[in-house]
Each structure stands twice: as C-alpha cells, then as structure tokens.
Length: 476
Image (tube, rainbow, N blue to C red):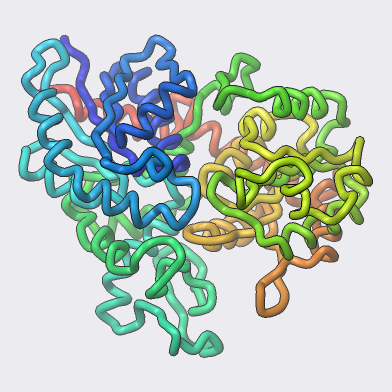
C-alpha cells in the first residue's frame, strides 16, 4: 500500500517552520509521506543549514516568493506584513503543485494539506480541490482561541482597540472559555489597529475563515489546556479538533544524548555547552528572548545589572538589534565592563544558541524567557521553572498561563511608562528561581511528567490523537 501523502505548508517564520517540521517528522515516523512546502528562499536557507530528513520520507519544495534575498527571511517584526502579502499571492503556485502531486502515481494522491492559521486561504483551496485541509497552529491554544473569538469581539464593537481606548476602564474585560479574564490593558497587541505585528484586518480575515478547514491539530496537551480545547470543540463541533502536542522531537522529550543538532553549532556555542558541563546542577539561569524580539537598550541594561547583582550563574543569549555591529559596538547594549565583571559565573552569547540542548542540560535551574510557545513547551518538557518576560503577540497570554494555570513560572513585574523590568526585580527573582527550595521546581517536574506522558506513552492523549489523525489518511 502506498503511504498517505500529506503536504505541510507553514508560515515562513522560524517558530512556525520549526513546529511544522517537528510535526512532519512525527507524521513520517507514523508512515506518512511528507512534501514540506515553504517560500523558495526559506527552503534554500534550510538546505544551506544542512537540512537532513534522517532517512524519513520528507521532501522539501520551495514556492517562488519574488522577494529580494534580504527580505526573504523573517528576522524582524517589520517583515511580517511583507511575508503576509507574499504568501497570499501563492495560491496559484500551491494549486499547481497540488495538481502535479496528484498526478504522481508513485506518491499517490495528496491525502491532506496541513497549513498554518496565518495562511487562511489554503483551507478554501482545499475545499475547491476536495482535499482535506487541517490547520496546524504552533502557538498556544489559549491564544488561538482568543484569535478565533476576535470576530465576536468585533461584532460587539469591542475591537479593534485604538488611540481612544481607555486602558483604565476596570469593567472592560475579555473572556474566552477556559482562560482567566483579560483586562483591556492585557489583551494581545494584535487587538490594536494599528499594531506592531501585522494588520488587524489580516488577523480578522484569518479568524473569520478557520471554518474552511476540515479540522485542527493543536500544539498542546489536552490535560494542560482542557477547558480551552473543549471550548473550541463546542464552538465548532463540525471540525475534527485534536490536541497533539507537545510537537517536539521524541529524543528531546526522552532526554537522549543522541538528540540531533538544531543548527550548526558555532565554536562559541560549543564553548557555552562546555561551560555548562563545568557548572553545578540547577545552578544556571538561562536567559533568551527568541529569534525575533530585541530588548531595548534600557531593558538590556536593567537586566544586566540585575543578573550581576544576583551573584547567580547565568547564560544569556542576546539577539543584537543590529547584526552588522561587532565587537565593542554591540557590547554598548550592556553596561560598561559587565562581561568582565561577571566572567566565570556568567556567559553572554551574541548569536542563536542550541536552545533544546541548553534546556536539557543538568546545570540549568531556570529560564528567563519571552514566553514564545515553542520556548515555553521546551521548558515545560524539561521541568525548567520560568521567569516570564513577554514581549508581543501570544507571549502575554502564555505568561499568564504559566503563572496561573500550570504554576511553573512567574511573571516579572514591569514599572513605569516604558514597562521596564527593573534590576531589583531581576535580582530578586533570579535568586528565587535558582533556589533549590523554589516551589516552582516541584510544579515544573509534575507538568513535565504530564506533557511527556501525553506525547510519548502509547496511552497518552496526544499520542492517541496523532495516531487517530493518521488513521483518517488511509483510504477506507
């Protein structure tokens, strides 16, 4: 029997692509043949970075994006709108590819298209071609549920928010099933028009077209977002909705030493891992803010002074706002002499780091994070307590979820007009999370067990849900 053939099409941003590729590998291990589609430039970049399917039936296919080379990757928020316009124009190219794949007798007809929520038009195309189409959303289901309720909030006249919105109106609360109420000052920034991520009109369009899909694959654990998942099922009973997360490699979840490389590790990254080998167990705070977010100079200075004052060990990965800066220029982001004064107990890495290897390391005792969903899941699955410093998009809701729903971390308090986390707050919370007596550590260990059982055990909810999805792909 020919293996069922699934086309996977993520939005071309690193967090979205990484999650979609992890899902593709899981499906391939269950006997599914994968064609992984993205912009031509992103596929080219994956190949240059040494993409390896590991013997799995995963083929890469690039669709022409028409962008200049320097605009083809999402490194900053200001490129998101550009990529939205590009991907919206790819309908004819994707349709041509699907028709071509359907004529390939060796591969068999396309059994399903798995696409990103931000590529709303793929669901409509699936309907036109009579191909089942499932949304895979790599962010939290709580945030996803908020997005899907946006049309309701718009019809009530409550969104979008704008310059005249009263952020002090204590009665202006937003409620989605299964999540703590959000005050108007706490709602995700995509609720504003304009907002720093993408146009509100585009968010509304995506949220209005989700029912074009056949179903949804959620990157979450049912037991951890049960009420939210149930709320979505009640909102759209006609859709096949399955929680299949955490979508992370089994080798990472099991803690195997053979865990594959996330990226080509530089000499500096290798030195960081060697430095961790020399540190005591759970003694190091890992600090990182993802692949897009950049700290302001004021926030970076406060964070540095807090880490220095804490006297605790730390590994800080900094994404420089200007990648062209080198040496002394880039260190101006930090207080003068900071790296010298903290030498031995602190390491600063000015490039992407092998995050999964770092979080899996026995020396890591806490994670100061922006609460991107991938980072949040990775920390949960390694039992690492979190200090939450959300920046944009889903991160504020993720931080609330970590603090109030699973109790594996705490939100750092912000001060002043610029919402800065002070050095005193960083110092206090760093000491608290690294402390062996931290109550967060026992909660984190408990949630780690729940998440890993769901994904790895044959009786786990996510394992069973993913197998049930694959079963629908086989004819008859």
